[in-house]
Length: 114
Image 1 (cartoon, rainbow, N blue to C red):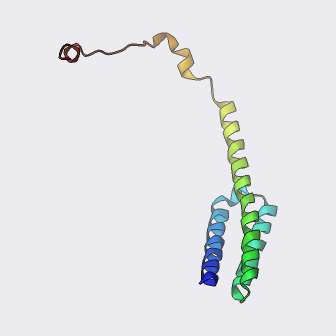
Image 2: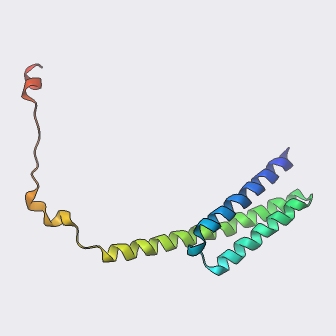
Image 3: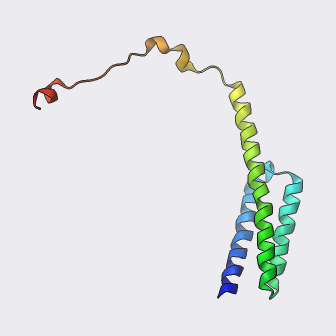
């Protein structure tokens, strides 16, 4: 039972890692792609054998290596976000402060019925 669970987790991790890598490949360096693909291959090879400890070890390695995908995607998104904010003009709300009126609406009929 434990072996089946470990194998299922390994297969799911391989699938999800391959999907994330395919979806975000343009944001990940070739070095990271190579390292992740090697770790995926190691898990697949371990799954072909009977050694459950080898599967666990290769899964742990893939977990560690696949975090680099997230780091690369986060860094790429942060860089894109910074580039976008540099180009943005000053906020239009700051220029239109004179037109803002702070008011409270009071329903007089409701107040009288209390």
